[in-house]
Length: 201
View 1: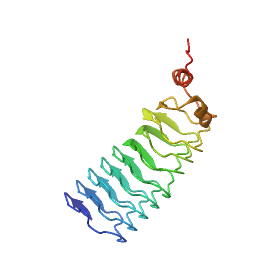
View 2: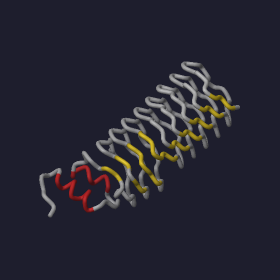
View 3: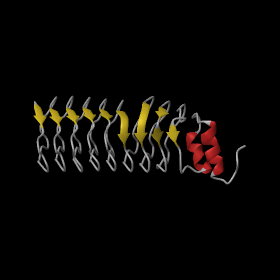
């Protein structure tokens, strides 16, 4: 099933089986997908601020160039889903079941992703600034053109991670313990020391 240029603003699609459906250039503002089955579904160039995917199944779903700012993904299953070129500012992924999820060229500023696993994931041009990343698993992940500026990193794990391609602005030296076992650049190390008022020559 392919839906093109549909206005589904505030439509209730909860608990429906929409496996493999394609939504293209659709308006999904406050659309209710609670508990829906959307495995292998595709969303392309959709606008859906406050869209609700609570407890939905999005296994291997593809979300590309969508604006889902403040979207609700709490308790959703997003295993092997991909988000490319998306705006997810303020999106809530609390308690989402996630494994091998791809975020690329995506804004997740001020989003909620506590406990999310990015283990061994390549993170390209993803903005996590001000995001809640408490207890996230970034072990052996690599960052490229991405930002962790002023994110909440309480109990996050970074062993073996390559952070040289990440903006670590706002991180204080006493917070740097979170990055134990990770690789950072000389410039990043200098910036951390500068937070203490030290100059690196």
